[in-house]
Amino acid sequence: MSCQSFSGKTILYQTKAKLTYLTFDIEQFQVENNRYPSLDEGLSILVTNGYLKAIPKDFWDHDYKFIFQEGKPLVYSMGPNGIDDKGLKDDITLESLDQTIESDFELTYLVEALLFIAYPLPCILITPSYVALSVFGVL
Image (cartoon, rainbow, N blue to C red):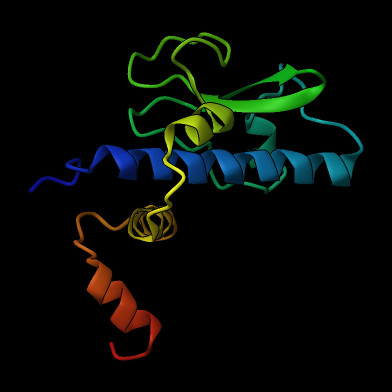
């Protein structure tokens, strides 16, 4: 099993978590600076001001992007094709993910995605039972 053999749902949940975190960081920047980052500053201003350690890459090793849509920042991934469609077409946004992810929420995939972001270890297999045992203090 290679480190890149993730299910489609896991990729979606990881992408959703990263988009959520980046959107939060942009909003936090706005609260503290009374303005959003400019498009010229891009996400790199979040690194410069200490909101991020580095600009994260999406699952396909592309930088996340943002634009303004109706005066609000829209953070997106260019997706597997790497073509910047400014948050449209097949680019991946929080809104497009919400439409893609089923309403019967699967906790296993969310936990796996969040753990991968919080603890990006080289290659570790975390099963639902391991997570449950760890949460309840057994491990």
